[in-house]
Length: 194
Figure (spheres, helix red, strand yellow):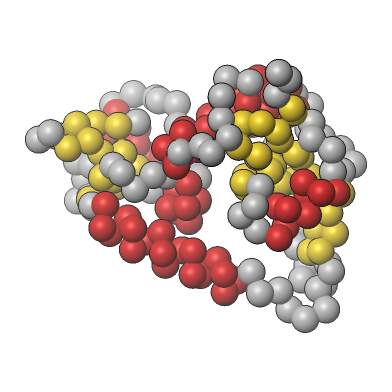
């Protein structure tokens, strides 16, 4: 949700459902994302406001957002250093949640930026992490704003389909070795036909 104040557009964020409901004064649809995902996926061209009209309000200007994006990117690089000897297994998901593929295809078909999409299962052996799903998108030089919108649409479309403790990594082809490996090893489940 975006609001405008004094000629400035703000992306509205809340750190709890209760604060959102109190602010909206009614039940509203929302998308829950971890903080790092918001920083990574949302465009820095707008200002952000966290918890408006509360004593916990914080506004972020584009310079602060740029700094946050750099900090999260650096932290992600440092975390991506897997312990020596860790095997990364990539494959076709043995089970895909009911309705997930249909929902993804419907959402992706509305975006002119996507050429292909791949769905894989990723498992990091030796570090006690459960396998998770990874969606890799191959684009036609999409803008950051278009990708931000698409990511939000994917999150909305898959809400309730993955289960409580499961998540879907959304990556762009070419952004990491893992994304590239998925595009090389698996067949695309979505391809734009010309």
